[in-house]
View (tube, rainbow, N blue to C red):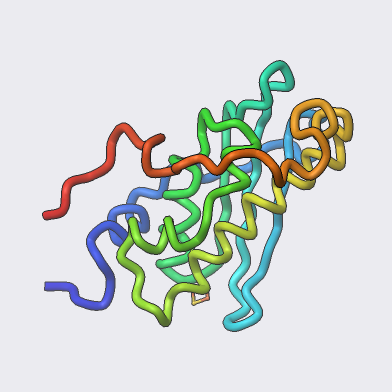
Length: 159
Ligand code: FES
């Protein structure tokens, strides 16, 4: 039996979801490129946004890194598809680490995914400054917190 990685990590590692790239010059695409200082691993997250309702309609990733980083980005892409930018900006790495059962030493791998989506969102806003003022009303800090947990219709049962 494999013991070093949880089966959910291996599943995403072996069958990564939404691997690929989108044209980063497209107006409706936000690109986030982040690196982990601790290990040098790099993650690229790209989102395509429907400007009508600020919803993420497509998402792609490329990760040059460890299995946990690949799994974190793969899971992140599943999680954010269909979310609004505001919802996606609230995803925390702890949510990802919990889903994938990452050990403490691998927490920074899930941090890359949180940084990646935030960076992609801010890149989208920098290309579409109007979207931010219209839909977030400034910083958005007064908005109520959403429960990411409740957005998952396919929460896997513990085995
Ligand atoms: Fe650095 Fe996983 S070891 S991202």
